[in-house]
Amino acid sequence: MHKRTSFLWAPVIGLLFPFLNTAVLVFGFGQLHAEASLADYLMFFLAGSLIGIGLVYFLRRSEDRGVFRTVLIAFVVSLPFALFGMFFGGAIGGVGIFLLGVSPAIFIIGVGYFAGRMLAKK
Image (tube, rainbow, N blue to C red; front, side):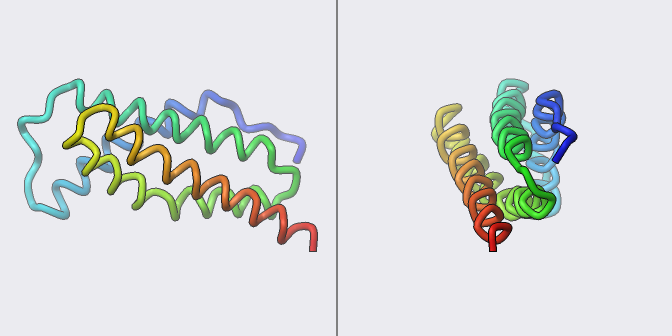
């Protein structure tokens, strides 16, 4: 691939996660968590930005269009796992959000990258 994905997309992806968290709370539980502080949403943003950095890293390493698509599909697959980990990791605190939210997402995106590379070589 000739075009490289910019790391400036990482904060944009990071902004996605506080909105997704709010959507899960509203549509899943029927209410908004009114006691959440700005620090909670900041943690979701920072964790989402780390996931965005991982996504952009693997997208930049993609040498084939098929690998690029596979990484994007893996990112979409990792979203529910990341949100679940962030949601329940929030009970532990900021460390839980990063540990339980970022780790599975980066792992799934990495597996998608290497699976795409294997499929592209065949």
